[in-house]
View 1 (tube, rainbow, N blue to C red):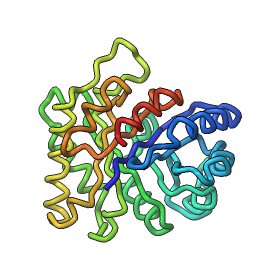
View 2: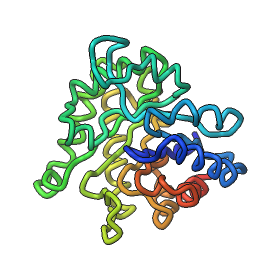
View 3: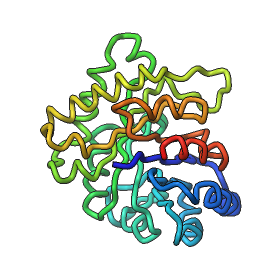
Length: 254
């Protein structure tokens, strides 16, 4: 199973900037064969990016979606629209969606079910914040999120879902003085998640379950993180906004 390196640009890059980035990235990762590369840009850039990466080993994903196919939901994007734009992946349950927009596990579960219905591959984000970590609630939080978000998902469907462990306390948000979690911290979280997945779905699917790290992966720590036995890739935020920086992380997974 290839490592998955996904770029989450969040609310960054105009269409012009996105096109420039992708053209540069294509050249930088042209020889990469053993890593799956996914770019999750703003919705406005999806169509243009898809045209540029037509013959490249780069896939696209959306940063969010609504669970309904259509309707009176001003400002929302449906799974049908995302699919038509050429997306293979969609991020659901990102910590910023949970914290800023008050998305809960029940809503995230509905989004996952809708994404799967339309042939999209969800990247489910889970993880604890600093307060929960300090109170020793990390394992409870992670287990509850998994059970709630993956409710009514069967064995065949879990194989299409990537789980992104996103310890919120470890995310730098672009702060250069911030210290990310150690590789051992990240590995411990991934190992626990794998254990919960095994309890929920059985051990036979574990070797096909991809769990990636979403807690500030950078060129400086990517190789060490990706060498850990239970880390199958990365969901990259700030470091994905620069083509050279992101390409370095991708090459660490190759």
